[in-house]
Amino acid sequence: MFNNSVGYNGSNANKIQRYSNVPNIGSSSRFTVPTGNIAYFSAITYSRHSEVGEPTIYAGTNAGKLFRIEDADESSPESFNITGEEWPAGSISSIAVGGSNDTLMVTFSNYGVISVWQTYNAGESWENVEGNLPDMPVRWAIYHPQNSLQVLLATETGVWTTVNGGAADVEWFPVSEGLGNVRVDMLRVRYADNKVVAASHGRGLHVADWPLDISVGISRQETSELNIYPNPATDFVNIEVPANVSRTIVIRDISGKIIHKENSVKGVNTINVEGFNSGVYTISIIENERAVGESKLMISK
Image 1 (cartoon, rainbow, N blue to C red):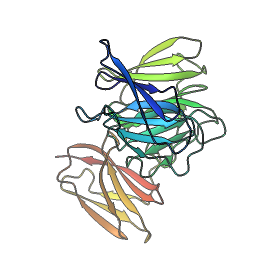
Image 2 (cartoon, one colour; image 1 turned 90 degrees about the vertical axis):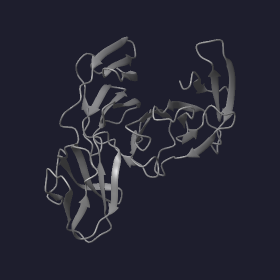
Image 3 (tube, rainbow, N blue to C red; image 1 turned 45 degrees about the horizontal axis):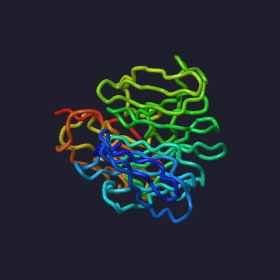
Image 4 (cartoon, rainbow, N blue to C red; image 1 turned 120 degrees about the horizontal axis):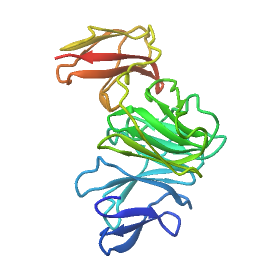
């Protein structure tokens, strides 16, 4: 829902139906998104980071295509294809938006495909974050309201979670309390108190609290390859990069948003952090779009 409007799959392929002036007596219209093939939309998500009066929505198709649609209230809104190059031609089941429009997670509800993909650069590149999940349909994903490294997934075998969704090899764990291994189709979180509702298949709705994990942002397997100092830092931080290859230093805040990015040089890389707020950050060394080194950084003012 956006600006008192509801968007949903249209009656024809490539079309999104829009019902305006909710909850008053409204009017229905629809617009076409140039998907490049005949495909129905299987998931539509509104971004809570939209500018006032300029709603941004994300629409995924049952053929594995993803589109960012800007000014979705307009009669012919502008759309951008941000589909991952390695994605399967499966059915997109959900699109989650993290701490900013840079952070997105897309899930697929098919067997035999990589089911979970994530971007930290608004869809310019995507990473496979399926990790240790079994081969099963993933039906919904949500980010924790206070930290985009915490994620919940609704799957064919219940709810799974991680507390470090930005790691090189994401570890997922089943949430065993309450639902067991029953299929879960949808998850919703209330931002006011981090209360989660899970819609199961045949066992009704389940409600639980989703507390912020205070260890979020700390790599579970920090490598000796990444050495940073001083830590905590105030004005600057030194990052040692031993390999003379093409690598990128990425710093993310507690929401998972990229706040600094630069190409590295062999040896000590010094980064000015005077403008950073106090708190916990994650520093990653990226090579070929994979994190090869990662560590936490404390900023203390």
